[in-house]
Image 1 (tube, rainbow, N blue to C red):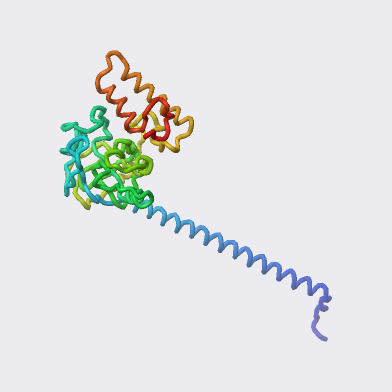
Image 2 (cartoon, rainbow, N blue to C red; image 1 turned 135 degrees about the vertical axis):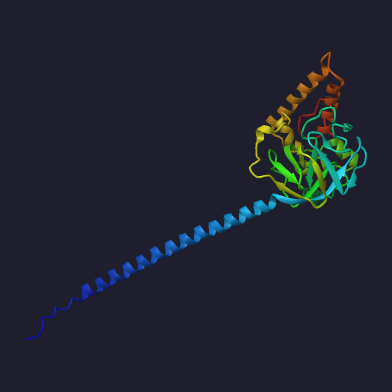
Length: 293
């Protein structure tokens, strides 16, 4: 007898079976494609994050482009191949060093005036975009850097060369006095966010041109900053909101009240005069924003 053979499937069931198998294959392929795409996305994100971290590390390391001191108010800056930084005092021979104290703002000493830094790239941008002549020779800063972004380093420590360590207390801001001194109309506004850092010298020593300037890891601490109580002064005058302008005017009233006190020292009266000169107040119509000069 012949072996048993199952009867053939009807045509409609054969079509259904083939369709089901094809759908299963498509589903499996889709799942594999989705998994591959997800894996590629994760890998791409990891590579992007690694490259971004590398760029950040590179942006936190630069060099000393040039070094400058000034022996007194309004005097020319002198370029030096090397400078000595004295912890808690300042740059040896500079107008804001506590053993010299001949700077325009020496009457109101603060740790952040011990040494100042400015990025060469910011001055070059201002020169290119606004046609202003501003550079290491007339920026009134001690250390000109290249290759390290300084704008967001307030509250951080920096190491300069082998020995010197500084702490950035606040951003430096330009003043109308500087604009008048160098004869560059519009410099006050144009340089506002590129005027550098005001730092305290924690560890002293010698620094030289081409020394490395780098961020000290895990040093961020805004609580250490001794800065201006009026935060609106760190906003460019033409960009201050109504609230920020009111804050500036309120702070000026505080300075004015100290200067008007019967027993006010000469430094308080000078402080009011310097405030007006620095931020561009010409008369009582000043609204706390753009300079009147």
